[in-house]
Image (cartoon, rainbow, N blue to C red; front, side, top):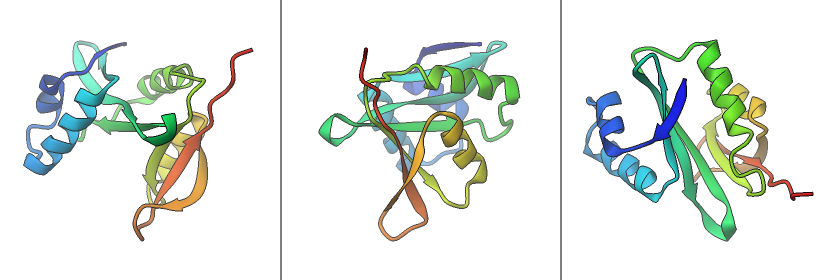
Length: 134
């Protein structure tokens, strides 16, 4: 498994069925970078990155293949790398409370739930506080 810099080609190859609205959102996220594509066995498994947010925070985003969810080894690789990405910066993620797998992934990646919800929805903001260097 390896990470490579993500491109719009990666997104188009992984999600050819997505409409223009999702394409525009992915385009903004990928081009704002940093963004990576996770490859395993010559195939794209996931695409994700960090979107610059306000006050120096970053927003994490992740899109998994819809036709075949990554296995445990792939998720473990992803988690191990997540814990090392910009440890000094606060990173947020938005996860629907109904998404049990997403909540588990967030906890394993060092995120904590907050009381902040996205516009009256059940999409909660999670935070991974930055750690000061010794």
